[in-house]
Image (cartoon, rainbow, N blue to C red; front, side):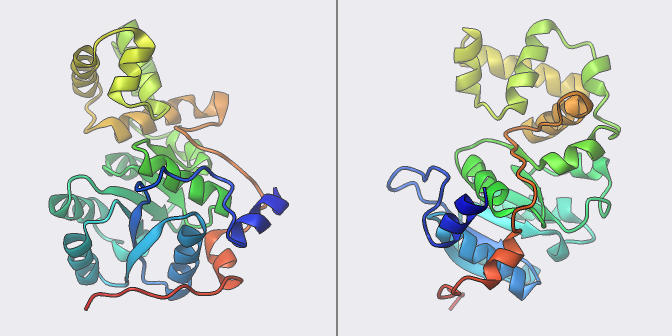
Length: 261
C-alpha cells in the first residue's frame, strides 16, 4: 500500500482515470491554505483539473457560477453554521455539480444533520490519499461515497434503524441496497430485470416511507443500518495507516493556482 501511494504522489495514479474528455473540473473550498494545496496536488496527481481554490463563501459561490465545475470539494470549515443551506445555494447555481463534503471531526456534526445533506460524497478530512481519490473517481462517475470511518456513527443515527423497521417491500429493499452500492437507476433496472421507470417509482415510494430527501440520504441510512455487521459503506474503501491528503500535499510541488480574474 505504501508503495502504491508513493507511485501516486509521483504522478502515476493507481485508480482508473475517466475516459478522455471526462476529466473532472473541480473547485476546492476550504479556509485552510495548506489543506487546499494538498487537495489540489492530489487532484492533479489523479488526472483531474482544479479551476479554482476558494477560501470564502462569496468566492465559492462566484466560482461555482463562473466555472460550473463537475465537483466541489467543500470543507466543513467553510460552512460551520449551516452546511445544508450552502449545499442548496451551490446546487441552485449548478444542479449537476457533485459535492464532496469534508468533515474535520466526526463529532462536529450530528448524524441526523449529516444524513440531511444532499451531497454525493462524505469524507473525514484525515482520509488517506487512496480513499480520497477513490471517492473523487466514484463521485465523478455518478456514484455515492461514504467514509467507512463514519459508518459507526451513522449506525446510531435516528434515520438508520428505519431501514430495518420500515414497511419496505422486498423489491424496495433490493433497490435500497443497490442504491447504497452507488448504482444508477439504469444499472439497478438491469440488475433486477425491470424497466427504469419501475425503479423510479419504487424509489419515490421508498423516500416517502422513510421520509428521506434523496438517494444520498438513502445510501447513508442503509450503510448506517448495516455498519455493525459489515463495516462497509456505499462504495467505500478503507486503507489504514496511509498519508492523509493534507500531509501528502506538503511533499509535492505546488501546481500553478488558478483564480478568478
